[in-house]
Amino acid sequence: MGTAHRQEQATTGTFAAFARFVLCGGGVGLASSFAVTALASRIPWALANALVTVVSTLLATELHARFTFGAGGRATRRQHAQSAGSAAVAYAVTCVAMLTLRQLVAAPGAVLEQVVYLSASALAGVARFAVLRLVVFARHRSRTAATVRTARPLPATAASTSAPTGPAGLCRAA
Image (tube, rainbow, N blue to C red; front, top):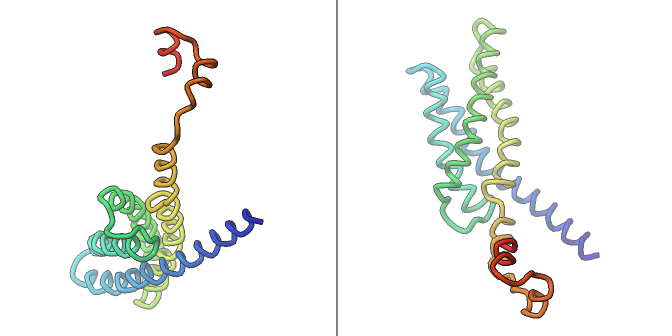
């Protein structure tokens, strides 16, 4: 019974986190799509996408640390670095999608560009959610580390009966 309840809570937690991820990340992504379009009228599209990706990744990582995954504060440098790695993959996905569109359609309209860009972003976003939840903001790491730190040593009698005595025994046990 306890396992089924914990599994149900984990599923509910995953859906709630995904909803917050869509709200925070999707909001930033939607704003980013308009920012890319506006910048691309002045500079090359790939450069506009790169600039917007950097800024939006920093903003989204902070939002995810504070709200989506409940990390309890600002994102750490490690979390920003790991998030940047997943954003680099998302950047590559959007670039490939847009380059493919331009190979298939000579002069795509703004609406088609938005559809392709947002579709590629959504696909990359689902993969990013998994990476952020399972790696970047994983809570089990801190629980595992706490368990290791608070583990109690074996009683002396149990240790002395199972471990060889003398310096050679100490080396083998280490």
